[in-house]
Amino acid sequence: MSKSNRLDTNQAKSKAYYIFSFVVVFILAFLFAFPLYWIITGSFKTKQEIMSTTPVWLPSVFTGANFEKLMSSRSAPLFDLKLFGYVITGPTVPAALRWLVNTVFMSVTSMLLTCLTAAMAGYVLAKKRFWGRGIIFSLIVCAMALPKQVILIPLLREMSALKMYDTIWAVIFPIVGWPFGVFLLKQFAEGIPTEMVEACRIDGASEWRTFTDVMFPMIKPGVGACAIFTFINSWNDYFMQLIMLSSNANLTISLGIATMQGESSTDYGLLMAGAALASVPIIIVFLIFQKYFTKGITMGAVKG
Image 1 (cartoon, rainbow, N blue to C red):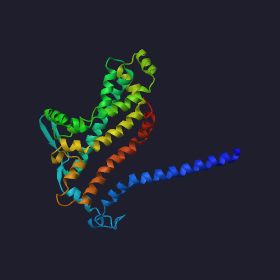
Image 2: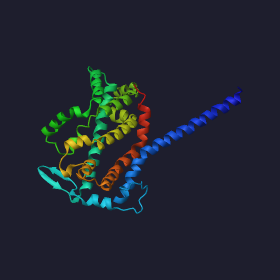
Image 3: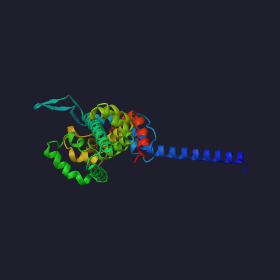
Image 4: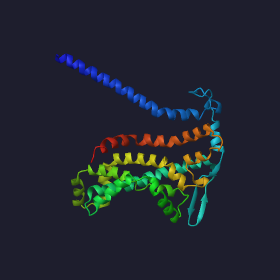
């Protein structure tokens, strides 16, 4: 076979592989995006269109009745602050809005605290040499495989002893120190040359200065990936929220919407409106951290 024929064959194979990859990616993207499309469009449909045996791909008339029902079904104060024995209560708003505020506060706070603690722990485990370092890291790896249901009862008793049961903090603190976050950022920290840390020490920089000015900026892609993972994990942790939260004002959006289901019938329009409302913040967070997420996955996946 001549050189030109081999070149044509390779180009044909490359083109076929490109077409096949495009088709597979398109199918996967469609399968992942279709449920979101169905929820968003369903939130604007009438009950007859939702329950129709023939799929209605687009609402004949976009109606906000489902969102109006969601906002008018219950009410709750916008916030409750306890300061020095006094309780400051915010204005009364639709309960769905309070649930959304609770969920955003829970997820953002968990994300910030987890990224901070995981970054510091990853830096210490990667760059510091001390007795028991390997044992600690082995325990962290083992904790990653431990089902949350196994430690649920001890966590419940711990939160009750700390008088945090039925508060948002009861679902925030168990997430802080997430083993996977520590594992992920340790892999990133190991990719930073140790000579840079030693140079900082020679120049007289403190450990905190070394961490904030040198290590943290260099592991920022990993922190971005950890932030998205933590936010999604906290937002979707329905089981923990179900166990730790009970009062109407402290519910999260997913838990609150679930309590609106009737025993004998289900209002799918109401559920879709709540799901559409709950999907907005998580989409916004992903779009903000998307650059760090993709960069973090590609950089940290092969480090050992």
